[in-house]
Image 1: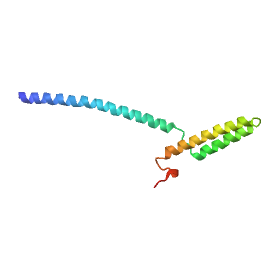
Image 2 (image 1 turned 180 degrees about the horizontal axis):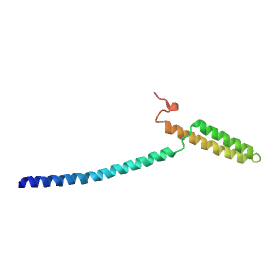
Image 3 (image 1 turned 30 degrees about the vertical axis):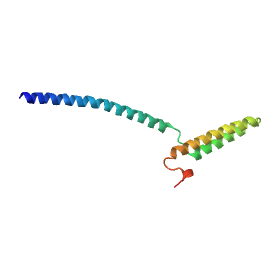
Image 4 (image 1 turned 180 degrees about the vertical axis):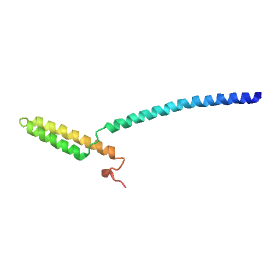
Length: 109
């Protein structure tokens, strides 16, 4: 009888020890999942326009500038350069995000 009571007490203590040790691991996993979900949400918010959409925006902006800034050609050229640089970076960013699927420029098979 005494040994069964001691055995039950030991099993209860072991059960509590296992439960407490797992709580730390569960908290770590929950924190990792929270960080990953925040990262996924930030990626989802990112501007995911295709290169043709960006080219259309570039052409519209340049046409607007050419119509409104005709008297200062140097300033017009600088603005066109800025717009072209912006569009090129957006297209490159779009291609880099898609490169894990396939990258048509880098086919090394």
